[in-house]
Image 1: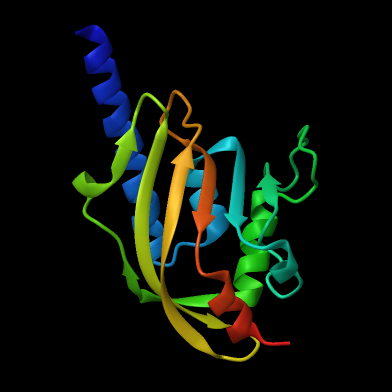
Image 2: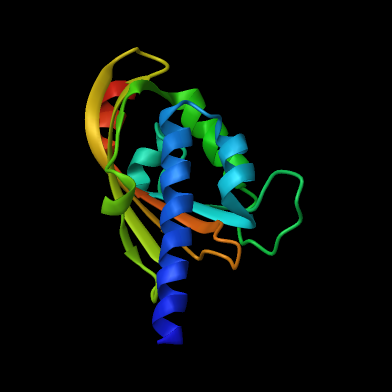
Amino acid sequence: MADTKALDDRADGMRSTAFNFCQSFASGVAGPECLNRYFTSNPKITEHGPLWAAARLPFLATTFQGRRGQQTDAPTSKTCDDYYDLLTSTLTFDASSVSFPERHQFAVDPAAGTVTVKLHAKFASVKTGNDWEEDFVYVLSEFDEHGKIGYQELWADPLSAWMAVGD
Protein backbone atom coordinates (compact mmCIF):
# COMPACT_ATOMS: atom_id res chain seq x y z
CA MET A 1 0.00 0.00 0.00
CA ALA A 2 2.83 2.42 0.84
CA ASP A 3 4.39 1.81 -2.59
CA THR A 4 1.08 2.63 -4.29
CA LYS A 5 0.75 5.85 -2.29
CA ALA A 6 4.34 6.83 -3.11
CA LEU A 7 3.73 6.18 -6.83
CA ASP A 8 0.47 8.16 -6.73
CA ASP A 9 2.24 11.07 -5.03
CA ARG A 10 5.07 10.90 -7.57
CA ALA A 11 2.57 10.82 -10.45
CA ASP A 12 0.75 13.86 -9.06
CA GLY A 13 4.00 15.81 -8.73
CA MET A 14 5.19 14.88 -12.21
CA ARG A 15 1.80 15.72 -13.72
CA SER A 16 1.70 19.07 -11.93
CA THR A 17 5.20 20.07 -13.09
CA ALA A 18 4.46 18.98 -16.67
CA PHE A 19 1.14 20.83 -16.74
CA ASN A 20 2.63 24.01 -15.29
CA PHE A 21 5.52 23.84 -17.78
CA CYS A 22 3.05 23.51 -20.68
CA GLN A 23 1.00 26.43 -19.32
CA SER A 24 4.14 28.56 -19.14
CA PHE A 25 5.10 27.57 -22.70
CA ALA A 26 1.58 28.40 -23.90
CA SER A 27 1.68 31.81 -22.24
CA GLY A 28 4.98 32.69 -23.90
CA VAL A 29 7.33 32.42 -20.91
CA ALA A 30 10.91 32.50 -22.25
CA GLY A 31 12.84 29.24 -22.45
CA PRO A 32 15.49 30.14 -19.84
CA GLU A 33 12.76 31.10 -17.36
CA CYS A 34 11.01 27.76 -17.98
CA LEU A 35 14.33 26.02 -17.38
CA ASN A 36 14.72 27.91 -14.09
CA ARG A 37 11.21 27.07 -12.89
CA TYR A 38 10.59 23.51 -14.05
CA PHE A 39 13.89 21.78 -14.80
CA THR A 40 16.69 20.27 -12.76
CA SER A 41 20.03 22.06 -12.53
CA ASN A 42 21.54 19.85 -15.25
CA PRO A 43 18.69 19.27 -17.73
CA LYS A 44 18.76 17.71 -21.19
CA ILE A 45 16.65 18.54 -24.25
CA THR A 46 16.48 16.57 -27.50
CA GLU A 47 14.24 17.56 -30.37
CA HIS A 48 14.19 14.50 -32.57
CA GLY A 49 14.47 14.89 -36.31
CA PRO A 50 16.65 13.99 -39.25
CA LEU A 51 20.26 15.10 -39.04
CA TRP A 52 20.14 16.43 -42.61
CA ALA A 53 17.54 19.02 -41.51
CA ALA A 54 19.85 20.49 -38.86
CA ALA A 55 21.43 22.84 -41.42
CA ARG A 56 18.18 24.83 -41.46
CA LEU A 57 16.90 23.75 -38.06
CA PRO A 58 19.99 23.80 -35.81
CA PHE A 59 18.03 22.73 -32.71
CA LEU A 60 17.25 19.30 -34.23
CA ALA A 61 18.95 15.94 -33.85
CA THR A 62 21.25 16.75 -30.97
CA THR A 63 21.02 16.56 -27.20
CA PHE A 64 21.53 19.83 -25.39
CA GLN A 65 22.64 19.49 -21.78
CA GLY A 66 23.17 21.74 -18.79
CA ARG A 67 22.79 25.46 -18.45
CA ARG A 68 24.87 28.32 -19.76
CA GLY A 69 27.81 29.11 -17.49
CA GLN A 70 27.63 25.72 -15.83
CA GLN A 71 30.40 23.13 -15.95
CA THR A 72 29.06 19.72 -16.99
CA ASP A 73 30.40 16.39 -18.06
CA ALA A 74 28.18 16.54 -21.15
CA PRO A 75 29.67 15.24 -24.40
CA THR A 76 28.54 18.45 -26.13
CA SER A 77 29.03 22.07 -25.17
CA LYS A 78 25.52 22.96 -26.37
CA THR A 79 23.39 23.89 -23.37
CA CYS A 80 19.63 23.89 -22.96
CA ASP A 81 19.81 27.70 -23.07
CA ASP A 82 21.44 27.30 -26.50
CA TYR A 83 18.54 25.09 -27.58
CA TYR A 84 16.07 27.86 -26.81
CA ASP A 85 18.31 30.49 -28.45
CA LEU A 86 18.50 28.42 -31.64
CA LEU A 87 14.80 27.60 -31.58
CA THR A 88 13.65 31.21 -31.10
CA SER A 89 16.09 32.58 -33.67
CA THR A 90 14.64 30.15 -36.21
CA LEU A 91 10.94 29.82 -35.33
CA THR A 92 8.22 31.76 -33.58
CA PHE A 93 4.91 30.48 -32.34
CA ASP A 94 1.52 32.00 -31.78
CA ALA A 95 0.97 31.56 -28.04
CA SER A 96 -2.80 31.90 -28.49
CA SER A 97 -2.74 28.84 -30.77
CA VAL A 98 -1.16 26.48 -28.22
CA SER A 99 -3.43 23.79 -26.92
CA PHE A 100 -2.82 20.80 -24.71
CA PRO A 101 -5.01 18.47 -22.67
CA GLU A 102 -6.38 19.12 -19.22
CA ARG A 103 -4.08 18.22 -16.34
CA HIS A 104 -5.77 14.88 -15.62
CA GLN A 105 -5.30 13.79 -19.26
CA PHE A 106 -1.49 13.94 -19.20
CA ALA A 107 -0.15 10.39 -19.58
CA VAL A 108 1.96 9.68 -16.50
CA ASP A 109 3.97 6.55 -15.77
CA PRO A 110 5.43 7.14 -12.30
CA ALA A 111 7.27 3.80 -12.29
CA ALA A 112 9.09 4.70 -15.51
CA GLY A 113 9.29 8.36 -14.48
CA THR A 114 7.73 9.76 -17.65
CA VAL A 115 4.99 12.17 -18.64
CA THR A 116 3.80 12.22 -22.24
CA VAL A 117 1.63 14.97 -23.67
CA LYS A 118 0.46 15.98 -27.14
CA LEU A 119 0.32 19.70 -27.86
CA HIS A 120 -0.80 21.78 -30.83
CA ALA A 121 0.46 25.16 -31.99
CA LYS A 122 0.94 27.46 -34.95
CA PHE A 123 4.59 28.13 -35.79
CA ALA A 124 6.29 30.47 -38.26
CA SER A 125 9.76 30.88 -39.71
CA VAL A 126 11.60 33.95 -38.44
CA LYS A 127 13.36 34.21 -41.81
CA THR A 128 10.45 33.82 -44.24
CA GLY A 129 7.32 34.36 -42.17
CA ASN A 130 5.87 31.14 -43.59
CA ASP A 131 3.69 29.45 -41.01
CA TRP A 132 2.01 26.12 -40.32
CA GLU A 133 0.08 24.36 -37.59
CA GLU A 134 1.13 21.06 -36.12
CA ASP A 135 0.72 18.59 -33.34
CA PHE A 136 3.83 17.69 -31.40
CA VAL A 137 4.70 15.49 -28.45
CA TYR A 138 6.69 16.07 -25.29
CA VAL A 139 8.10 13.17 -23.32
CA LEU A 140 9.33 14.50 -20.01
CA SER A 141 11.45 12.24 -17.82
CA GLU A 142 14.29 11.97 -15.30
CA PHE A 143 12.29 13.89 -12.71
CA ASP A 144 14.22 14.64 -9.53
CA GLU A 145 13.02 14.25 -5.95
CA HIS A 146 11.51 17.76 -6.11
CA GLY A 147 9.47 16.91 -9.20
CA LYS A 148 11.61 18.92 -11.60
CA ILE A 149 12.13 17.73 -15.17
CA GLY A 150 15.53 16.27 -16.04
CA TYR A 151 14.97 15.43 -19.70
CA GLN A 152 12.64 16.84 -22.35
CA GLU A 153 12.27 15.01 -25.63
CA LEU A 154 10.22 16.47 -28.46
CA TRP A 155 8.78 14.94 -31.58
CA ALA A 156 7.36 17.44 -34.04
CA ASP A 157 7.01 17.89 -37.80
CA PRO A 158 10.51 18.89 -38.90
CA LEU A 159 9.62 18.68 -42.60
CA SER A 160 7.04 21.47 -42.26
CA ALA A 161 9.56 23.57 -40.32
CA TRP A 162 12.29 22.81 -42.87
CA MET A 163 10.02 23.86 -45.75
CA ALA A 164 8.86 27.03 -43.95
CA VAL A 165 12.40 28.15 -43.16
CA GLY A 166 13.52 27.70 -46.79
CA ASP A 167 17.12 27.99 -48.01
